[in-house]
Image (cartoon, rainbow, N blue to C red; front, top):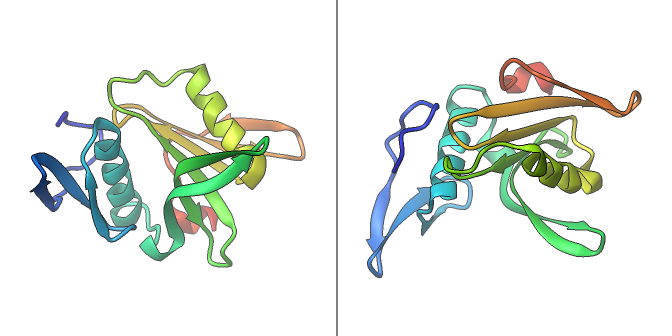
Length: 150
């Protein structure tokens, strides 16, 4: 797998039916290792190990509805009261972070109204803070620590 712009972690990998699987700490099971899953697992570990997010307050492939269509957010982080705090959209390192990618996470946010959005391909990470009163957002220099935003 490709090196990412995130710290390296000692992942649990195993082969199942001829394909590599990686252990997901949140779902507590092995899942097929794809380029996008590689980014997701790095981000989960980064958020927990370096940014203070608790695994107990994270959901992977979180179900939501948008215009009566079922969708799944890659990662949703919650605050201590159980309210959604941040949506994380993971893309393969081969996918450029672009306007359509941000539009995808914005559609997901239409149902959750979280204060923070994060999009990453493992090489580039774009995080923004929403301001619903002003109907605007601002990009942050870095991914915020959990203590800063909770």
